[in-house]
Length: 203
Image (cartoon, rainbow, N blue to C red; front, side, top):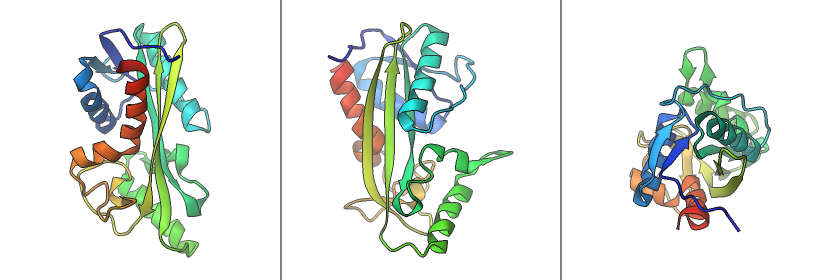
């Protein structure tokens, strides 16, 4: 039996503006007041695990303990089959530069590696999302979402963030970067995980 969320306020354990915006929109119908870890001045904890679940737990428990409020974390990334699942949990790391994250650089790196391997097409991939809702007493609930598709080149669209401009979900011709945000939100890996979170803890 999953624990119900009964509090009025929730910390989003993220400093990613795009992610915070998406999560806030998805939670809006439930009357939950959302504040981000960045708003509260929290540092980002070191993500030392090699799985999405492990890193999601680190972030959620850190924010819950620091704030005394329930906290929701999201650990997500793109896994490319021909790259043995890379970048995976290191999706954001591939974009790191001394001047901040450069996702066009990271997407170019993914495509260059696929070209080097002469990977067959379609170059299948998936966006994965783990949501972890943690309480200050140490309890947590974990939900997994996924959307399958393939990577394409060149980058297309400026509607999304991260690797959205090279990801085409199955059954579609537009990248996540080209889609209307409402259409993407309805079918994304995050939406899949959120549907399970809402059913388990909010509905």
